[in-house]
Length: 119
Picture (cartoon, rainbow, N blue to C red):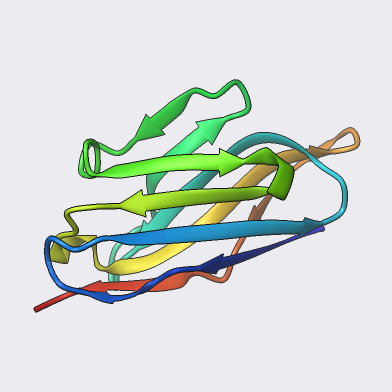
């Protein structure tokens, strides 16, 4: 079992920036993909960005050009740099890890961090 802890959320004005961090700890695992999802009230959870073990990165169209996902494998940490934030970015942001644990594949989710973009 892997424990994921997100940090860096908060209240920011439109046009501002935040950097989210997610640190993974626990059982030994091999990363398949790490990513960020978000969920606003009354809406489905949606992919924001992810990064595969090969380094291939995918962004949602709504954040492309504004957000940057990166990782530090040595620290088991993934980051989401969010620039030019908009009110529609307001949501709870969740870190997700898809990995193999021995011969088993599983997904782990963090508890989420609130991002609020408002004047």
